[in-house]
Length: 60
Image 1 (cartoon, rainbow, N blue to C red):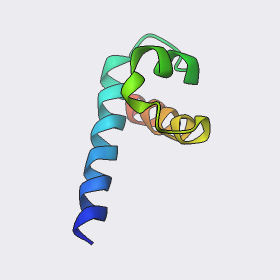
Image 2: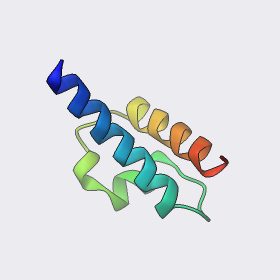
Image 3: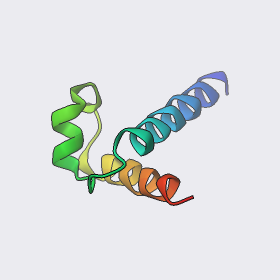
């Protein structure tokens, strides 16, 4: 359970960071892959989910 909690916190930080970092750009998987190679362990679908959450966070 401790690892799950840590993973959720880290995921939330990624989403929040992208929402702040990309205020003007329309996010795409290619942009994220270029700017954030540390996320290359994720597949495209996972990055698309992050983009969706980041876009939602920007509109709140």
